[in-house]
Amino acid sequence: MNINEIIIAVAAAGILSVVIGIILSVAEKVFHVEENELQIAVREVLPGSNCGGCGYAGCDSLAEAIAKGEAEVSACPVGGKPVAEKIAKIMGKEVGEFERKVAYVKCDGTREKKHIDYNYVGVDSCAYAAKMPGSSPYSCKYGCLGYGSCAKVCDERAIRIIDSKAVVDEELCVACGKCVKVCPHNLIELIPANAKYRVQCSSRSKGKDVTAACSAGCIACGICAKNCPSQAIVFENNIAKIDYTKCTRCGICAEKCPRKIIKVY
Image (cartoon, rainbow, N blue to C red; front, side, top):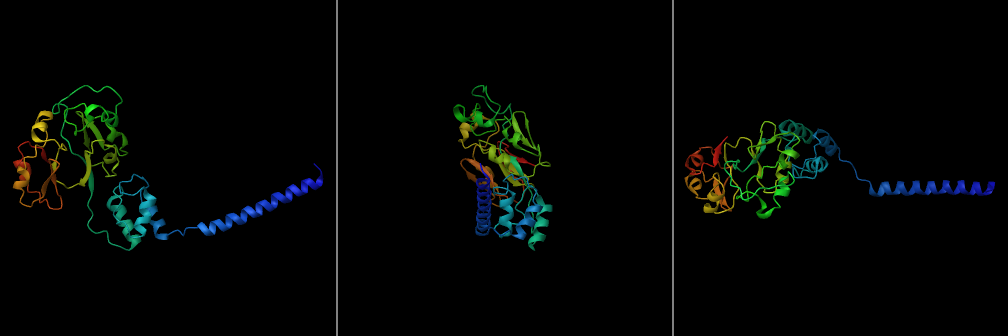
């Protein structure tokens, strides 16, 4: 290679570099997205767990929604009231009434209460066990499988498997919702932490079948709903459901339940 060829190669490389620089500069201007100062400030306050418990893909998405006014300042369940207050200050809003929530397992089927159809031998996972015949080795096809998938995804270690059933430590629970998503039987939901009376069953079976499968199941007799003075109990798919916005915590439902599956907390 002679000197002229070297000069031409260097010149070509230089011109190419300039062209690429111009293209990148134009692209940056064309595709530039203005950063919202409110969004940045809110994002810095959020805990960064990206758990999805707020209903958004992660903290970035939630920060954007709050900045646009599409989500409440108290939308982050992990941050709780302290974070909600900081975000409210940034947004120039009031926090309002803050309701702490906790994960609740709607099943009281401990080992001695639930009947077994067959012995499951396989991966120690609720997702795998739910793919077995009948979606469960137990007679109740809606109850807790007890293999701890919910406990494994809980970053706060707020869930333990006790006597073949998931139990939530509400002092540790931050209501991130990871356990709700991973439970194959949809047994876990987020409820107000101050919910005193709770239905410990999710079976959709009819009364006779419930009794045959578990000694701790709702038979959909309707006695609790009939005796509730505030009409806070309804039945969906053969299971009692408490509307906590109406519940006055009178305790009549728990007192009248013949199966004693409405527990006091």
